[in-house]
Image (cartoon, rainbow, N blue to C red; front, side, top):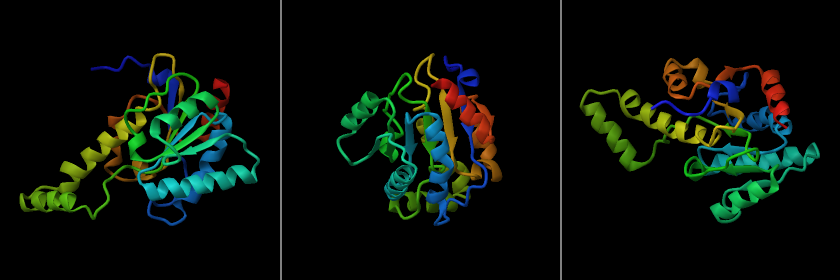
Length: 218
């Protein structure tokens, strides 16, 4: 079914330039440096969705430091500071807050209207190796002569990503920017499948265009 929302007029999809590899130890630091100007432009009103609790906590600590250094006074709420619904209510109440969460905030979260204009996703949500069920599935697919990445890992990551992206535009009047900080979207051959799976946002890698768009929403 076609979406009833006008993504091409009301929203941008932005992949920042010059991001390090997702496994780089400086990734979260660069992510924060790249996204603070966007959060300033949107006057808070932002979700930061991380693919792991470890990344969520590190991004939260780095963002708090950056806010303090630059005297940015938007409230920051981090998953675990309180019950999920309480954090969402506080986020809505303040109207200029930043909420940082992990995968439990990628779905079942509905913030409509001007309280949310910016959603930042750190990485493509591929499942991490180490889970025995996950590894068993990969081994089974390998025995069947199938490519586990193409037949399982990529489709599952796309579904999770679409859930996270779905937090931004919740009704006909919503406007905003979706930021995905993972350059694999652009540089890997499978990136085209991911691009095609997402709504028809206006797409750019131009930071100035994004800042201009966000400032006009205020």
